[in-house]
Length: 402
Image (cartoon, rainbow, N blue to C red; front, side, top):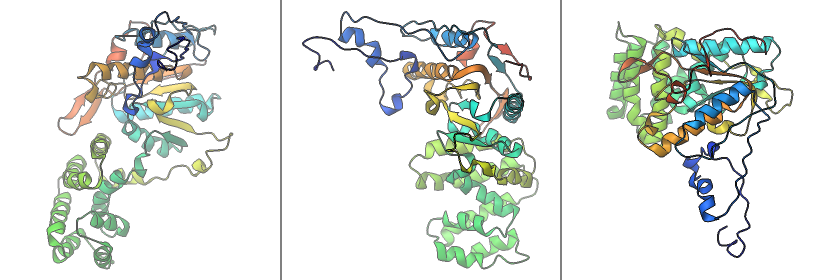
């Protein structure tokens, strides 16, 4: 553009520096910040009137972006009347966060807000895993954008298959999945093993059968794992950790994007930590999503939106819930050491907040589970913790009339 316009400098650019969130796709924040230097004398016209959100939501968004290191200072305003203040919730655990979100969605829906006018937003796709389980349990239809649904992910299915054969040694589908993960084991070997799955087949017999099969080099670690998983006295989290330690090397060989998938599996441990019994855990994960999700193209179809914030840009809903607004989750741990990435995380929070028209809730669990540290305490995202008092109402479970 600089070369095309070198004789006249007659160029107009439209953009929003506060919503530059796609550096991973090659977007460059400097393109808009450096425009006045590339085209000296450029006139800057600020579009500050907002036609979407109520003023309390805009006040929150203005303060979030005010902390940006570099920006075109803007102050969003609306001619709409006053509305509810955004709310901050600190539930005790991730599952309580999920149940709280579902309860509010049900409440708003009963008061006349269609599900398709509500959305739950999150920094990373795996942050919604526990919520997905809760929505399925409550029979609420939803669509997820920006990542696979929890139970559609191959690596989740792989890991859980090892626990499923412990809970039910005659589960032919899970055995097939487990065996085909082993290097050197093909479909014929898997079929030969599955011929044993008759009445009275036990995990002890399975381990013995594996010991007789070839290639034994690959099957012995699997047999050792299964023996460890059935050892009495082991908690579900201990079993999951053992399965994950066994599966992780297989995962890294199968998938180029294994770091992201490992994060998914580590978050699965957070969900596992609230269960004491293997069968109840697997039963919850086996529930089928509501069948009404089939026709999502219908304009009258009513379903809740779950979305990463990157996938939600440009969209809007009457009610928005931002979950896992905790330090280390949002902003993400890997962005803490680079200022440019931290600045983009701030803009990401700004984008999330400005998706809401009338109701905005921000949530983070007080306690989480970490694979290395066990149970840990969470602190609120710095983008929320640093806000002036009074912009957010804190810890209320009911939703008032709009």
